[in-house]
Length: 409
Image (cartoon, rainbow, N blue to C red; front, side):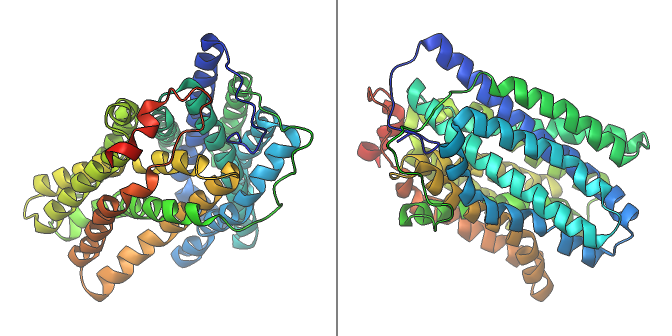
């Protein structure tokens, strides 16, 4: 079965068409990430515009993850009904256009439903594009998922750069986000023209409208949970750690967050070659060792340079875990979209609870103890990497880099 819930059509395609499909789905990931980057930079404007308190803002910012978790299981049914390309085109447009909704909200009562819809569109398009990414990877016979997620990270960085310029220029967020939404909708529509056009066989039964993820997805999702928890801790708390635990100035503390994000993006863009050489299981095990080493450096740091080195190692170690978890989920059973939705839901949940969990533990004990938990979860990557050893679904069996883990683990 294909990654989008379509039929078992694995007819070989011309290599030029597959290369075009790879470039196209990479641009889809870029556009998806750029929406997140643009939105994140205008959160302060949205808070001021709606006049809400920090506590109300924190509550509102939980709604994107709630919306995504509720809507993700619907993506497989939509792809089955309309075909992979058409479904992705519609869901991606829904996501890019929803970027303007939070800025149009006059108060918290409008903001929460707007963010719920925003998150639902994000989750469904996320599942659709990852399913097509797994299918494209299988057709090509070599790893590409890490690079695709690297493109997402690059899109987020580009979007945040554009949003930063708009914010410093004093632009009204409604105009900025409306313009960004139109540009990214156009980019997404152009990119979707080249992705694989997979359609379900007429006799194939549609997936359920809403179903719990299979057990295999829960095990794979646990690995993704560990990685996303560490990612959330690094992105949201690295600057606070350097400022509060090590007494650095605000500029250097903020630079640690940027460095962490850039390290992850670079590692993902280069990760496919590593996976092709060593396989998913060995790569994740080595990444877990790097991330745990980084965590130990953070805990033991008495100087900012040591802590920043630790955050860099942590970002490097966890960078490829989530892409490989999605790829493994897409090959783990007869309902790839359902499995990908399950893994995505677990990782979204991890990203939702990580910042508050770190803060709660720090409040009760210290930030050092919080990052001891992050380090322990990084060790879980070493122990649990074996669940990513899922055979490829390629018809020719040429994706040795993807299936070699079964022999090497």
